[in-house]
Image: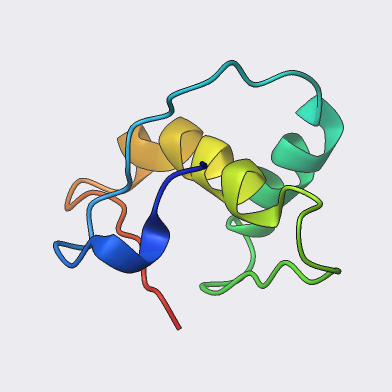
Amino acid sequence: MGFGFGQRRSGQPPAERTSFVGRTEEISLIQEAFGAVRLVTLVGPGGVGKSRTALRAAEGLRERFPDGVWLAEL
């Protein structure tokens, strides 16, 4: 089942266990938004892929943030 977000406490993004298909437009929009703001929030009903999309976008932003990217569970 998924990533087990609640079990991780290090803050480092979890590794993907399954393939990721689609959402390229959404990922691009998220990454572009970080050029203008410091915080981006994804909203929607549970189970639609917000966390996975956010993690994929974060992976593409690593080079822009020398201190790395971190998962902040709320």
